[in-house]
Each structure stands twice: as C-alpha cells, then as structure tokens.
Length: 338
Image (cartoon, rainbow, N blue to C red; front, side, top):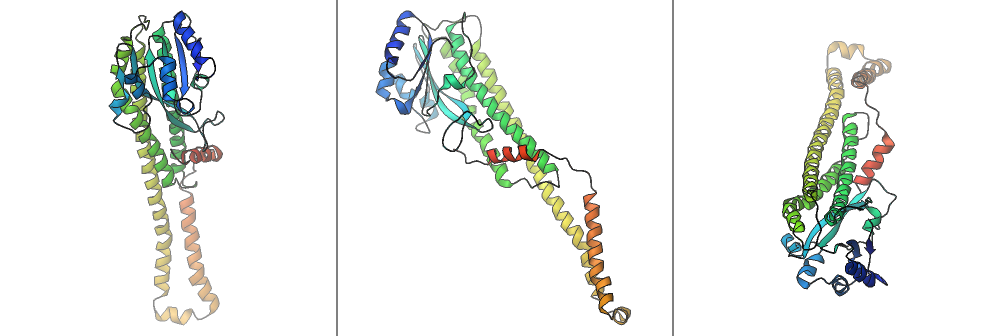
C-alpha cells in the first residue's frame, strides 16, 4: 500500500490534509480507544450522520444502524481475525485467531478503518501493491485481506476437527471431551453470526461503494469478488459444522463401544459367579480345599477377563496420531472465548 496513515498522532492531520489536497488516495487506520470521536470526525471531515455508525461498536442498537450510505460516504461493519492470547493480540501464535470488529468508511479520497483494539491492520494484513490500479482496487484490497483472515481462522478450526476425528476414531487414544466439542461449535456459531449478516448486506454495500463520488473505478468488478468470497466462507463454515456433527457421532460411537466392552467383560464373570454360586452336590463335595477354590473360582474369573480383553485389543491396529500436535490444537480450541 503506497499511502498509509496510522493513527492521529503528531503531524497526522497535516499529512491527511496534504494527501487530500494533492488528490492521493490513501488508507487510514485508527484505534478508537486512542482518539476521541471529535478528533476522528475533525481529522477526516466526517459529518455526524456518517460518524455515528462509524463509531458504533458492540451490540448497541440494531445491526442496520451500523450501515450508512450517501453520495460521499459508505459506512459498514466488518471483521478481521487476528492472533490472540489471554491478554491481547500478538504475532507469534499462529493457531489462535480471534475476531475484532472493524468499522469501515469509504470516501472518494480515502478508506478509513476504525477498531477498538490496539493493533495496526496495515502491518498485519497481507501487503499489496496498488501501483497503476484504481482507487476502488485499493478498497478491494483492504476488504479482501480481512476476508482472508477469516479463511485462516476457519482453516484452524478445520485442522482441529480433523485431529479430533482421528482421536475419536482411535479407541486407544484419549477421549474427545465434550467441552472441546462445545468450544469448537461455539466458534463456528460465532463466525456464522458475524459473517452471515455481512454477506446479506454486502451486495448493496458493493453497489453503494461503486457510486461514491470521486472514487475512481475501472472495468473490474472487485466487490462482486468479495461477495463471492463471503459466500465461499459461509459455505466453508457450514461444511465445518457438518464435520463437527460427524465428530460428535464418532464420540457417541466411542462411548457405545466402551460400554459394549465393559458389558462383554462382565458377561463371562456374571456367568461364572452365578455357576459357582449354585449348591450342586458335586461342587460342594469336590471344591473342599482353598487351592481348588482359588483355581476354579478366582482363576476362572481372571482367565475369562484376560481372554475377553485380548479379543477386544485385536479388533484392529489403531491409527497413531501426532499426539503433541493434536494436544496443541485441542488446547487452543478450549481457550476461553471472548
């Protein structure tokens, strides 16, 4: 990205004015917690009817109130998935991706992204070179990069599901915990809740961006591509939910399997104890020593149990998964969610 303004620190307002005066389209990224609404509105000359939805975060109001469009501004909510730990966001954890809410404003002179987290989106998102491309292409690059992070988050969930499927299908490994399944299910539900409404609105958002005054376009249909990517992302989430259901079926089959094993072990034990508990005359007369009792009574139980266990163990050679990798995936999935 050739022209980027991060924050509203010293000299930022002058640079913004200079870029707009020279006709240079730029990307501005601002953290709301570091700057007031008045500072943001004054620096970018945003009217109140566009500033209000731009600074509307969380679940305040109806989702439709976060969208605004006029001849010069288009404001809409978006989401970006970044690496996170318990204290915030970092770059050294590639397995844990959490969503941050990003409100976007598209103007004929710039694209503005506003978020509450203290991160730099231009440094985190993949870099592109817009040289020789239109201003609409710059907007497309920013939005497409944020969609790409959602695909990364979905890929991590799918990888975890694959590992859980291996664990669920291996009778010799640790059980797939119900808490892990609930955590994955919650992540998928939250992703779809965030991205589903965006997909429903984005067709209009793309049309409104194309009508922004002063936003130079070309012959490419960039925002149709973003809409198609959102469709693929929702389809991927639904496919992951289907895989989740299969894992739950495997877990249920595993539970039934172990119940069957326990019942199989106790079946011959019940028969033997019932048999030796009968008061047959021969049995009472012949089993009259401690050695006979131990050999026929206790020994029979031990032999029956051992034979049953050997039969169960010979049911097949289980798949040996990478336990360390799977444990890392499961640990990341089970981390507390926001």
